[in-house]
Image 1 (cartoon, rainbow, N blue to C red):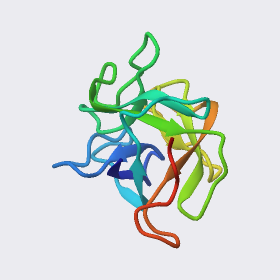
Image 2: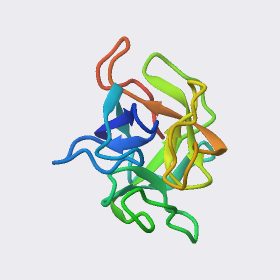
Image 3: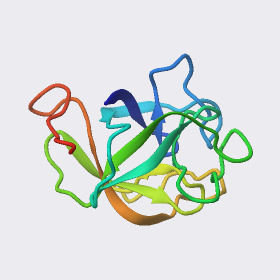
Image 4: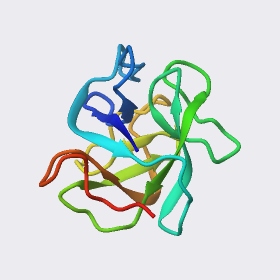
Length: 153
């Protein structure tokens, strides 16, 4: 599990906030952390309800899907550049006090964004993100226990 994944209040994307910078936000400048501190599983087996090939982009610090022929569109220019862990993210499971749903894949940029507020955020391709595929449910610290209590098999 890796912590320090955060929601960006400027673009609605998921980004890593545990490094030396705030990445590159499609709205300009760095991402702005808000809300939960997500704790995400990596380097575990995929299942029918957990999709792999989610990666950290070392150019923008965002989470993107790296399981297709395209690297998507990075707000830092060009395609995303994968680095580090292979995240395996649960989808289409029940939300809990320690796991938030409505996280989605954007078919325009290949990034992970929050689609539960009625605002599609800002996509680096222009306009808002476009939700496609699974409804991801991501564990976070807080709720009734620190560190999350979501089980990942």
